[in-house]
Image 1 (cartoon, rainbow, N blue to C red):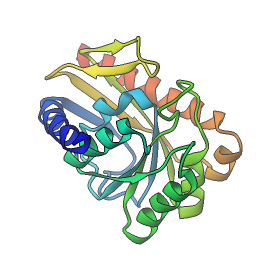
Image 2 (image 1 turned 120 degrees about the vertical axis):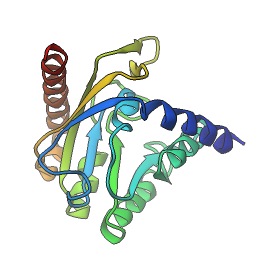
Image 3 (image 1 turned 90 degrees about the vertical axis):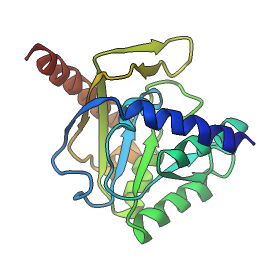
Length: 207
């Protein structure tokens, strides 16, 4: 039942994000890029799902009841789910994501601070997936002109209003081995991508 509710919610989100005016700043169109691991903060999904990924995508989703709801939402948005979390089935879930990247040439989407936080502190899973799959590890940041933050939620979820301008920045690839050993490298790269997105947005709105 939760998955069905999530799917219905996902259809609403899909219609919502289709109203955004999106500018993507990336070295390559996502469809032309090799299968990659994208790293972003947990509360920024709404802005990020407004861009076309150009190939199959997969995300790691927890085994919780909320994860079942999220899996339905992602399905409506064209993203496959592999179930697993830091507390239950994490290694198996990560292996499932890696298989999708290697065998199906899918992009992998990682909210690197995870569903439990702490917020804006990366865990090493995305870097480990990139390292084992031999895929680029790409930091992602976003900015939106009309948006508000649900600050009572730990992840400071960014709700982007309809018809907003959205800028998405995909940074240069990180050294996955170094990032797996020192996840703070991911923190800094995502922060830099987010700051660039805000600058690009300010220039776009001022033009």
